[in-house]
Length: 430
Image 1 (cartoon, rainbow, N blue to C red):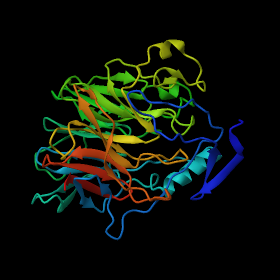
Image 2 (cartoon, rainbow, N blue to C red):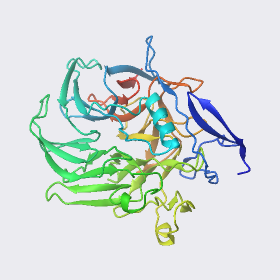
Image 3 (cartoon, rainbow, N blue to C red):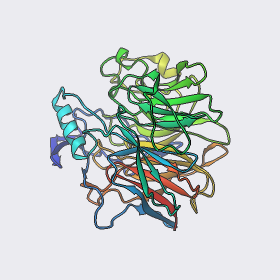
């Protein structure tokens, strides 16, 4: 390709990174009408990720003006997701990606990159419970709520039953209010294929009758065929009365965080898009989710832009739904929660998004927590930072990486899981 710089590559933290002229646009593709650069398929996919360092010397993430941040909980082992119980207990899923033997040179480079960034390795496979009994914004009590799980992620409590999204399916346990541990073997409700995008987020419907689960794709663009992707790249709906399970929406490469918008009652999600087409192409996105809706993966992205690397499917492209709001390329937008009016001073009602941060673009993106304002049930303005400062200025070190987000038990704060800093941060009014 003419725009390769002599097939040049540089070593960033011991990992080869392909360089292309003009790879990173000056502006990110953000908003309802993003400017998305033309796709430029990469012969060698960019790999760039900072070394995981963690926090030291009293350093913390940086809160936006008018806000303050403190550690709600520390000393965790790769905390990923949060669930706040009605009694104020905060549950944290501690788990990590697992990987088999690499099959290619790129796989080996990718695994080395992910391990250096603390994104790949042994998984704690547990949910811990943190209790702030005196209400000072710092948890004093810690308990192992449940261990021996299989890469737990999503959690939900409905009518005395506690649901866990393991990578291979949903398990239900009996729960007693105030309990610090789940007992019993649990009941398997649904099975999902493990591997690939392994997280399984959960969200109960407001009426408590249904449970929604995000199940990501196995590969980037159905590289191992569509049969291997059956039941994946979708959001599933579980009927908690009958036990029936079905795909609620499809074509969502890796839908992670889930949240309901209260004015319209619509389900929303954040989705991580495909790799290998450039630093800003296509953008990750925030979107409402229609029952039976198809969102393009793997055949196209955004407003029905065809991905020429995939065998053509004009019928699928024609029915693809354009997402609502672009979040920038490779931001790894994972965490999602609805922020009601009045929780954080200066921030109205809207969606809060934990952007875990890129590993596959020349200039890193994400590594922050943002707020997208809503009005009339729709995004209504540009995103604003709530928390940043997770990344060193030279992009070589990650002090932290935000993942799950949740409104705190006091209703006046925001909790953020940080899987590199091994902490849960609490953001409140200054």
